[in-house]
Length: 198
Image (cartoon, rainbow, N blue to C red; front, side, top):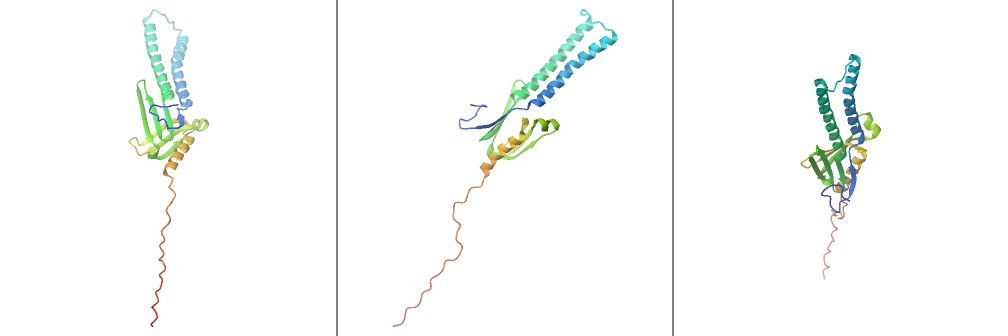
């Protein structure tokens, strides 16, 4: 089964990572608060000031038009967060790491780096909730054109680091010596005795 475009037939997939759900839920909750806040202020102020919303007035039409633009903006913002959460994929195979990121509706970036070009891998978890739900960032230092790969807000970043480092260790593991060491001791010389006189 192929998890990304260009996957080779003999390439084994070890990890397929998406962004953790908690950051997306946090952003969605913020947008929800931004959605209900104007309604709460409008109806609360109207109740205190005894306003009447007449459908035929110019102020009502302007309020509906501005409200529609505002909520359309919030819907587009929420959709962008969902695309970033659902379509961003980080793949670790036995040959390379692949970073697939969706930027907006029509911009998709795929970056990859062979395992033998990875120099260092570290993880980072910031905040209490990141430690509770076990998600964070994975930083991959490479020797390629894209010097640093970042897997953002992935689940169990320590496992990701351990998996990648195990692959790099298999590559840089020293080869066993097969040649016998040279003998540097001088070889004993045989003494020649003179022939007896007749």
